[in-house]
Image (cartoon, rainbow, N blue to C red):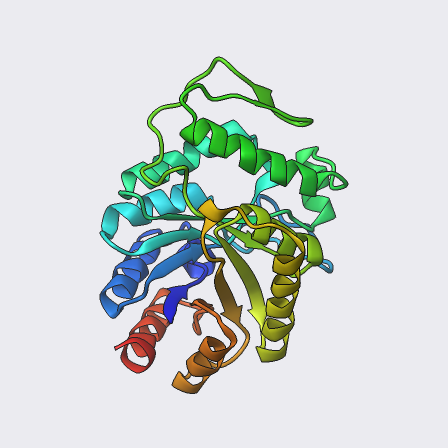
Length: 283
């Protein structure tokens, strides 16, 4: 089982009072044997907080690409995951350049976790319609892969169209960083099967994970999976206390990676959590 750490850019690890905290925790995670660290994302949060907003409006969050570029400079092996980036809120060519920069600077360690978004006030503030966010996401990923890998990059879709351009350097990983599709819905399962190297389920218990894996299996039976994507890798952030028994149970379900929510509110507490997990689940 691969073990990752969530919220490397959030809370105490994204606070302007102590930016070195994220680097300290990432270095500790690499030393403890964690396979990856993962960011979260909301460009803006509704104020006041109201469902389904997951966080209070003053909760600090660094930009995922900027945070991971910083982490890449203080680590050497640990993978760097976006968990997730809300793709339809971004210009795909600008995002492709940002993620290429992280992949190049890190020596090919980026995992591109993707989400379509769900917060209406966030889309409204950015001037982006929610209604077409799923179609935008699919086009944007295709367009990004085109500029990442084609000798003569070109793409012509409903929401993005370009030709006669180049964007160098290219990502170290070709045809681009692995796409890890987030979401617990039938369309998300279809996108995972047909256009992603992996799938990411967030904040799931055992029953929820089993339902999602069954949904992915049903999508796999219904839709063709391109051979170049390989086997679909399953990543879960569990809502279960981390124990060896927990790891074993998720492994039996077919989960490949667990991205753990840290138990702690300060840098010291999160670092202690990392050391505890390294000693009890990894070593």
